[in-house]
Length: 442
Image (cartoon, rainbow, N blue to C red; front, side, top):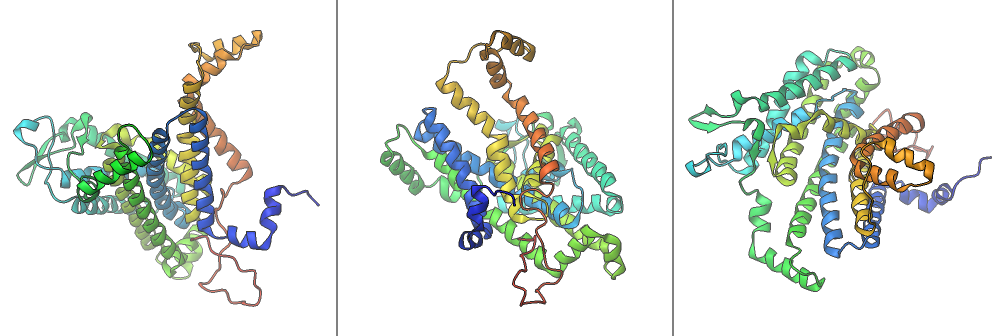
């Protein structure tokens, strides 16, 4: 008999085990651990309450966006087995379409700004979602008959074609329905209009008075209003994440979702049972792509403040894949947990830790190469290597991502919550067994 660790012994307790089986408990536990770690590091490094709070709300905003994208990718890969690595292409189409529809017309005094049609933000967001879904249809029709690796090549090629199209000077400005619109070329497009959150909440007098009251109550010099504004946006986007979660959970437990899972396991068998697998894959692909476009809209408006082709580089797609792999394909809860762990620990965590160390320690000048840092180890001097590591933390972060992926592939190939056992039917037939487990579609 192997000796179990304290965590295993704790979860072996029936009451604790039942509590831990609830997905909301897992989500709250992971979020709480990440936020607690940031608070402890911030306090240890002497950051102000205002600085720690601003960091946490910015972290929450980024987690929400990654969670939307990870959930959308889970529909493709976790449910249907579609290998889509063109995520940024659908995000870019959603963002640029929204700006084309919602940006106000450029005036003479704003000659450097490319205008749009000036329609409400909601109309632009819907247009961006539909445009990304239609692009998914265009890609799906010829590509979904291909094997997984060829589909991957097709989608990443599509994403690069989209990016270079938006970068092209030919589409920088053009006439459409009597309006001068465009993609802005290399300089991109600026979000120079108010979204509903800003108009009806953030720019109101009552919100400004709330921010002043909070600042006075916390004894903060200046104002905490910018951080509170980000908090409001983060809460709204977390609500959107909850909507994504609900949609995909209902999809996974529906007859449509069970066909998608059958396609994932063995498409030939699903086809032999009379299912039009091509049609099901097209619907799944369009739904996921449309929601990726919607996530691109939120990313552009609430996080970037502008769009530029360089914001949609292929590496962003692989970040989303890493988040999904960490949480586990086939699990909606795993998708959210993977997004939180990726953003909080692997992506933003090293940069936050670097700033915290720099605020309490005087770091010596870093050598130009790692060889200089390693050479100093011969004299038992760790400072040059330490300084070089902090100075190049972004590069070492990529190495850390690779090591995490290698470890997952060797130890946890299904991720944290991937492919949990599920019923073959919508209800368990043997109600006496008492050992039926919930499906992967939660």
